[in-house]
Every structure is written in C-alpha cells, then in structure tokens.
Length: 576
Image (cartoon, rainbow, N blue to C red):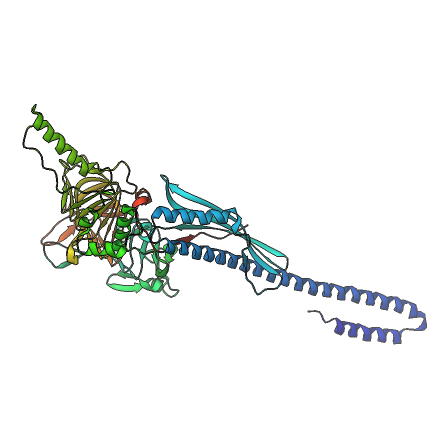
C-alpha cells in the first residue's frame, strides 16, 4: 500500500534542495516544478484513497451478499421446518381417523398456505438492516386414479441485507407413505448383498450395508456352500448411515467404503461414490403391521370411536371373526364354504335347479362380495370353485380371513384378486395369480414358521403384501434359465433371505424387512454337482433381478397403511 506521507516528505526535501541551489534567475521555473509535483502528489493521493474506499465498499458488498445468501437458506429451512411441524401435528391428531380424513386435513392446510396465510412469516435474524421472508408458495396435489399421492410445494424466499437481495427457490414433497415403498430392496437393520444381483432402483440400509463377492446357499444339506460371483450391479442409489457402515468383502478381505474411497487408497468402490447417499435412520417413516391391521379393521367398521384395545384383544385371542360377525351392516359373514350339489347342473328338476342356484349365490358371496367380508377358519382358492375375489369397488371394503388363506392356481389363466385383505393366519400363494390387492398378514400363532409363502408363483398386477412374520419367496424349478416375474411389494417385520443361485428370481416391485435382509445371487447357467451347485463358465445369465415399480403401490393407495410421521423430501435449491 502507498505511504502518502513518506512520499510527500521525500519530494519536499528534494524540492528544498532544488530551491536552495537555484539562482534568482531560476526561481520562476522552480516554482512551476514545485506546483507540478504538488499536483502530481494530490492526484496520486486521491487515487490511493479512492482505491482504499472502493476496496472497503466491495468487501462490504461481498459480505452483505454472502450474508443475504445464508439468510435466504435459513429462511427456507425455517419455513420447511414450520410446515413439517404443523403437518406432523395434523398426522398425530388424526391417528384415530381415516386416511381420507387425514388427506383432507393436509390438503386444507397446504391450500390455505397457497392462498396467502404465510404472508406474515418473517425469519428471525440478529443482523441489522436485514430481513428474510417467504415471497411465494405454490402448492399442487399429485393424485393417481383420484387417490391422493403426494403433496408438492414450491417455495420462493427473499433475503435482504443492507440493500443486497437474494431470491431462492426449492421444491418440497410431502406424503404419508411408509418409506419402505420407496426402495427396491432395503432393511431397517443390516442389508447384506452377496454375489452379483442386478438391482434397478434405490436400496436402503438402516444399520450396515454389507457387500460380498461370494454368494452363500444351501443344497441337499444344512451345510452352507459358497460360489464366487461378482460384481453387484446397482442402477440407483444406496441410502446408508455413513461410509464407515458400508462394508465390502473382496477376496476374503473386508474394508469399509471410507477406507476404499480414502486418499491413501486411491481405489474405486464397488458402488460409485456419487450413488452413495447418507440418510439418517431417525427420519425413516416406519411401519407397524399389527397396528396397521387394527387401523384397517376400524376403517372397515366406519366407526373411529371403537376402542383400539378391544380390537387388539380379539386379534391376539384369534376371535376377530367372532367380533366382526356382530356388525352385519358392515360385514357379510357366511358360516361355511358352499358345498357343490350332488345332482347334475343341467337337471330339469326344480329342486335341483334351486340347489344349484343357491350354491352359485353362496359362491358369489366369496368371489364377488358386495360389502366387507369375514370368514372364520382356513380358506383356499383353487381357481375352480373359488376362482378369485373381485370387488366392484375396493374403497372401504375389506376381505377378512380369520385363519389361513391359500391361493393355488396352476391353470395358464391367472385368477384375479381385486380385494384389500386382512389375514390373521398364514398366506400361501402358488401358481398364476393377478393381484390388485393390499394384504396384511399376521402369520401363525406363536410366530413359528413363515407368515407368507410365495412358491413357484407368477404374480402380475399391483400387489402389496405386508407380513408381521417372516416371508419366503421360493422356486422349485432349480437350474432353469427362465422364470416368471413376481410383480408385487413385500414387507416383513421379521428377517428375510432371498436367493438367485440354483433357481432364478425376478422381482418387479420391492422387498423390505424390518430385520436383516440378505440377498445371495450368482450369474450364469447353473447345474447340480456332487452335493453342490456349479456354474457354467462364460455365461452371464442374471439369476436374481429386482426392479423398482412405483406404479405397483400407487394403485393401492386406499389400502396402504397409516403412518405416524409425515415424510419429507427436499429438492435442490435454485438461485433466482
């Protein structure tokens, strides 16, 4: 920086020397020189002063610019936090109401904000001459087939600090879906992926994500065998708790993603870093199958004043069917499965025709119910006599089996299940089935065995199956190169294992477990060896594939479970 005083002193001394040495004849020219030098020094000083003042002004403007940006971001955060808090209060207060009542209250609140009830919202700040406020709120309810799906809100905020203004825009999406429906595969505990499955869509690990290069399997014994098959192929994001909790085992050596991606390592991780997203499990919207089961029973009775404790008691005592029979206005409750008449269907006898007419009418109670339905005992649909269930309108109607439900259809034509269902016992599905259903399954008493068994099934449609107990998806057609697709979402409160080693498993929808979920898969043609499974070298047949399909659950909105927490997704911030 220039020292104006020092320069002035130097020139002053030199001028004095020049004046002393000058003769009387030179006094005039020396005076002109002194005046010129003084002018030069004045101009130089003014330039230095102007530069100093301009730099200070630019620094202050830059500081105001940064502060206004931070204040605008803070405004967005406070607006979203306030909206989320108010919506959460609505969810909490409506816990004993219906899903439609909840959706109405959420829509009413957000519509009110869009009409201007946010105008007085100003962000608090300790800065002087600074304000932060919400300029505009645009709201849109995204529906699917006249059912509420998501609530999209676009926020525009303005912050001003000492005259410097900033405008930011951000999209926020609210919904009341449980989070498991947003993932192809996931677990609230550990998610383990061994071998080389192909996964389209996002995955979630609420604790640790473990990835290994060897698939484990059981074959003809209780001994665990392994097959090397790598790598995992993920077309989507892995939502994790931290890089330290992502573990990759390669050649019997295990390292965390943090170690793989460290500066000293310099190596690539099995999942590209840009596909790893940290999502805190505390924000995960959980599901409780049994409490959701209770919710749906209350909804079906259209009486929110019914004591939840009473419903829980009947479910626990396996007397739900007996309880629901007391509500004939809401529930049809046949005593037994209709028995086919022992006379020819084409008989001309009036009594025979009456017997067949009565039989068909009773069958229609089981296959085309007109209102909610309850059957006490085990029930089997074989595609022949009991050939599916079809409600004209599933809304507010529930098909309840107070026992085990078995679906066996080995015909080429699928049987349709267009019904939201509650099953207090086990659910078993085999053969060709088209599901347009949300099904809640509690499983066997005592919790032993599988609550849901899907065995050699081809499931089409849009099914969501939620089980309190364990789920097994099993194929008996080992070593084949093709398979039928299972198009559904599965959830279990328990643990689960999925295999694509000897057999092939192709899932369109999703699979989520509250406990640990383990996937074992290889690629290639497989065949039986001496007590083991072997792979034909040089082939790349995918034996386990899972593809996310959001249309599956969007078509089941009226039957989806209530949650006790509002789900929030925020988009990227845009500078206007």
